[in-house]
Length: 114
Image 1 (cartoon, rainbow, N blue to C red):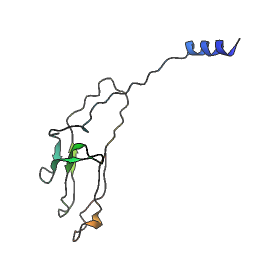
Image 2: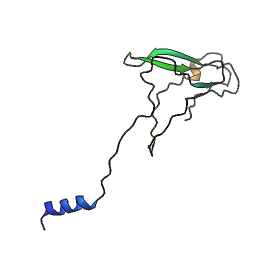
Image 3: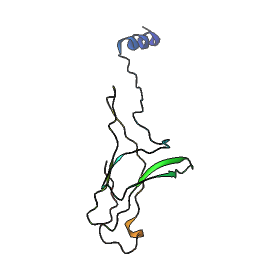
Image 4: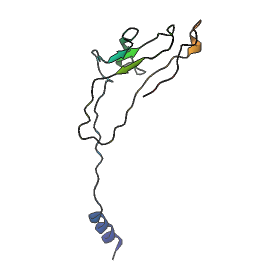
């Protein structure tokens, strides 16, 4: 049995798996309001800005550093997963260094949870 014939037989016996990538949500090029749910209801701003390549983007920002016990979060609308079995999430974010803000008590947070 030649090697080519053996490879051909193996290819017939092994199941074929196709990986298909599908984007469920992409706000990178959004130019209108995202209208996500924010908490607390005051303090958050949805603003237009530019990414590192000077492309226009929509962002959310919050800077309630003078408030004690920070608990700021964002929630998008429901994202249907269709037939997707595995989801990978990619997010870009920035967190300001608390030491760069003068005269702020210990309420500033530099953490991010997904």
